[in-house]
Length: 270
Image 1 (cartoon, rainbow, N blue to C red):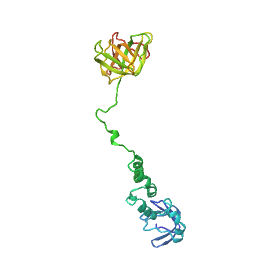
Image 2: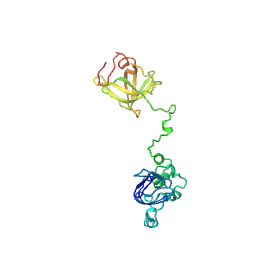
Image 3: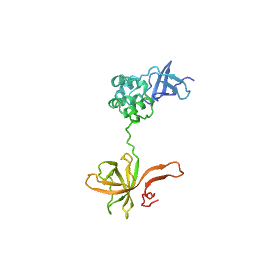
Image 4: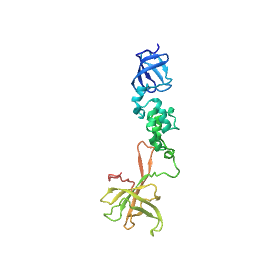
């Protein structure tokens, strides 16, 4: 069914809606209902007969054009034909045919150029070209570097203070020496946290990091040195949490301790 006078047509690309007022051969005289006009090579479809046609050219009459001179300078209201002039002035090397929305591209081309190379500009470019949101991923952020891990595993040591009333402090350094002259260090670490095991017995559970120097030994005397290296307290190592049994039905922690007991965080012993 051919296009008829009084029929409404809609553009597949511009979404412009117009009413056919006169048909002269292959030339249609229309009255624009909404939109900014049809684009060259755009497909139009009649709403009643669903007849389709391709736009060879689109021109506004001289009277309407004179009344719309100010609209032609506005990117939001200018005709599709005038978009080509905007492109030649603002983005001569950019192919607007690759974009989903020419008007949106030209309107934001300045910001796109100013922010080129940034994550926001890449996301915006993907929206212009494909009409979809994109996720930007940088290879550097997903590269694993050898010997560059900051992972550290927590360990616990149980100590009994030598002097009544002395309390270990987080950030203290705990040191075990190989001999009484204290010239050779057997093990050394920093106390990350302190947990009370028994206030009456001056017993505490100390959390240290696994990347310490050397290996602590149960039953040995250790020095607790403050961060300034001024105050030194002594304590006896009672146990060290050193492994976890993954083969049992529940999780068990083996402890190096003289009496075989393990000090828990709540102060009890098991």
